Image 1 (spheres, helix red, strand yellow):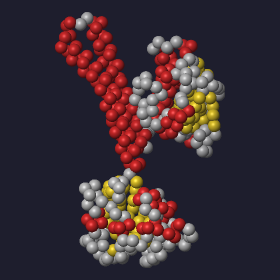
Image 2 (cartoon, one colour; image 1 turned 90 degrees about the vertical axis):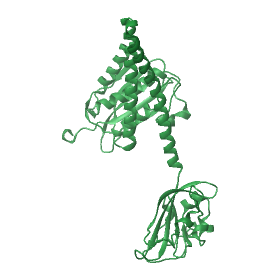
Image 3 (cartoon, one colour; image 1 turned 60 degrees about the vertical axis):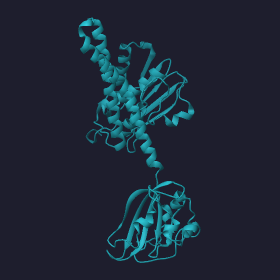
Length: 376
């Protein structure tokens, strides 16, 4: 395989040589590829150097075309050895078909991911083309940094409750007779609360893993959204919040909604907790019918949670649903809203953030009714 000229005017022709050969993709434009593409002919001369290769290597195509591959693309491995001398694509074993992806260094120390394919007319014949794919490592590094941050956050969040659990249980076992029943109860309640905290964190990690891998399962059942919000409000009131802190408004009639009740409870819990913890004044929850965010459906259900606090700064709104975003320094892992967005999108819905009429934060998510086919 080789890459031929497209016949188009301008820079495109400058990035490709004029050589053609058997099996060539005539009319193919290598500049449409997102990865860097460098092709050398049977003599080791560069005949194609696409736009992505220019961007990644910072070498103009005009300077690379016609030069020997090892001069146009001088690569070293992480131990400082010259890659083309080590691999010797034209003079090495005749059964080799290429090189697997590996990290290599460009002049100046910039790291790139490189894959090479050796094209032969017959299995053990001479190399007719060397096709090299280049990829920037920045996206992978961002992913690695995100994973490292996740591990650091989890380690930090686990340390505190586990230290508490270990301390109280060790104390009780060593000095059980010295404590009164009330003291024992207090310590056991603290252990129970910290164990719940660890359980929640582990559940968040599992949710993140499923969201990132696209394996978050949604088990749909009929859900009464107004009643679900009401249960969360009652739980806050039972925990000591005043009843007038919450205002629930349900616009009837609502369409019959099919969703995963446990995951919807998780979404509501996160949004209400954010409003109570980080917001001020009255927390208003509006449940209304809405247009479905899913193509082919007309009806949906929308839930809006707003408060009267300082709100979210405009410059932070595009980061609210990313990992580790925290609206304040009042604790939390910063994973809740990332999970909320993943759950809503797994239902085929959308979620947005903005400024509430009262000046605070306003989160609004809309779900399609997703009724089974036998009910529609």
